[in-house]
Structures are given as structure tokens and as C-alpha cells.
Image 1 (cartoon, rainbow, N blue to C red):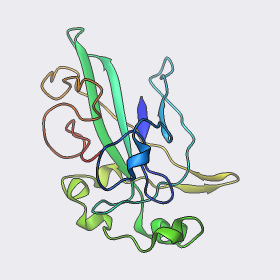
Image 2 (image 1 turned 90 degrees about the vertical axis):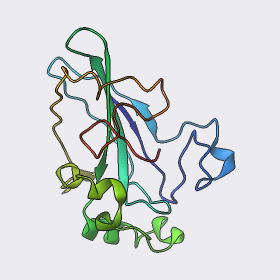
Image 3 (image 1 turned 45 degrees about the vertical axis):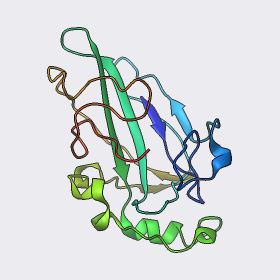
Length: 168
């Protein structure tokens, strides 16, 4: 499982998108690969994601696995955060330095295409917040699971849960 997100000030590593600082090209912060265990579970620890223009607060993820016929299968989507928690976290340093978010979940193009099932429900813990989610894949649909060549986008175009990761 690959995971990537922007930092508290909305910067993302390894991108050439004009919404991000040019000096982040060639960097790899807040990106990682976590193998799954025998039950298919993976765990990762990260900071609360920031935001960037035109997008709701989110974390990208990609699952890579063999498809039903042994071909490479990749599924990309995003996890979203509850608005009340976004408001609380983004009122704190260093998040507050970025200013007020411009796109809540309800106005995010990816979220509107079916992101509600991917809305995390983080619970307060001793070290911050914990959240979990389950993904079930239909590995027989090779059109959805086409490899993206490592570009962060793959499969057929569509909303979350259909192989589209949206803006990287």
C-alpha cells in the first residue's frame, strides 16, 4: 500500500503541479510504502494532512496486488477527514499559517463522486488520532486495476472506489 499527502502548510512532495512549491520536485516527504500482513492489513502513522487550493483535506492511497489472472492490479483512491475535525486541527499551529481552507468535502470534486464511504472517523488517542478503513477489491475487473506506471493515477476514470485518485 502506497500512501501520500501534503504537509501542514499544503505542500506535497515529488510533484510539478503549480499549486505546490517548485522546490518540492525530487523530494519524498509524507510518502511511503507499507506492505500488508498475511490478512491484507497495513498500518501507517502520519501527521494530520493540510490542504491545497481546490481540494478538501485528504490522504491518497494506492493498493498494488495481483489481479484475478495474475496481471498487475492497482487501485487508487483517497481518504477524507470530517469537517469538524478539520476545523479544529487547522486552527492550530502550524496549520493556521496556511489560512482558511477553500474547499470543504461537499465542494470537492472527488468527494462528490462518492467519497463519503471513504470519510474517516478518527478517534482521539494518547498519541493523537487513530482511524481505520476497509477496502474490498473486485480483482476480476482488469479495466479498473490497470497499472499507472508509478504516476500516482491509474485505472478507469471515475470517483473514489473506482480506481481514480484525482489530483496528486
